[in-house]
Image (cartoon, rainbow, N blue to C red):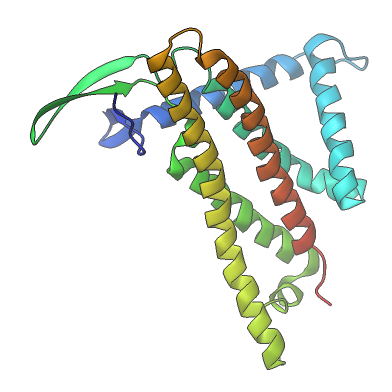
Length: 247
């Protein structure tokens, strides 16, 4: 049994390596796009079926965001980013638990110290790739800065980090460092939890197929939801903080 931290290359497109986690992210996006199209292609004033279900979720999330922001106007401003992050991470985590993901693939021969055959799955959970979680973290943190500048203005926003008072400037430098630390915290938390869950399921499937993995799959469903919630909720809290003037 071979477990690789890095995503494995499946094939190349114009010299660009396509990994199994990248393929899984494309599948996740395709599923979300198809659901969105089906839910909005025949909009009705009195919603039914899938449209009603999606609108109910949107209303629930908006009400939840209201509890953090205290303003429906601000909630509607943050909603697209926060909800997109939540839904993408959630579906990525759950699709990674579909039977066959991580277990169907091919053997690749490596010539390092002798000849070694390793198993390469066609698909792996998207967020078991540190590159993906790092990209999500960068989007979250950079978007937070952009929202802050747009909302309160460039100079007022920069005053959080730079001041005529040396003591406040030092505190601002620490605050700027904290922004970079958020990227590491976001990315490694999500990656660590999803990768650990993937390894756990592989080990259980190797020891006792069909029986042992079942309770752990239920656990990973819960963990996948919690990780999506934590990532999006922290993004929302940081957005709220960034759009408030410093005092």
